[in-house]
Image (cartoon, rainbow, N blue to C red; front, side, top):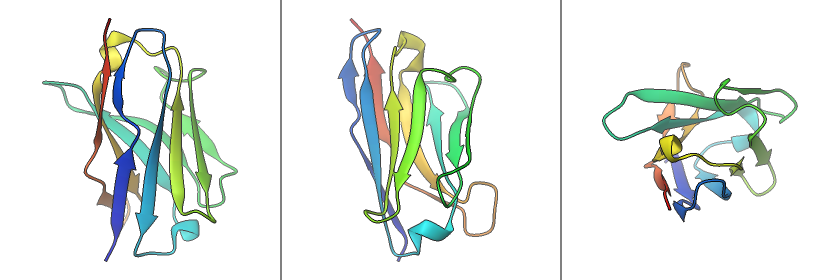
Length: 117
C-alpha cells in the first residue's frame, strides 16, 4: 500500500522558516519523481516544486524560487521542503505528491502551514 505522510507544518511568523518532511512507503521511492503542491484557503491547487528520482533535477514555481529548497533522501525514503522567508499568503495545506501528472499519481494527506504574526 502506497503511503505518503507529511509532517513539519505549523504556525510561523512572517519571514520565518519551516522544514516539511514526507515519509514514503509502499513503493520504490528512489524510482519516482516527487512534488510539493499547496492549497491556500478558498483557492485552487498551486504546484510548488518537483525533484526527479535521483535528486539531481529540481524545479520551482517562480513564487518560491530562491526561498524554498526541495530535497530527498532515497535511503530514508523521505522528501523534504525547506521554506525560508515565509509570507502570510503562503498559508496553505502543503501536499507531497508521487509522480504528479503521471500514471500512479498519489497524494499525501497534507500538512497545514500558517504564516501569521
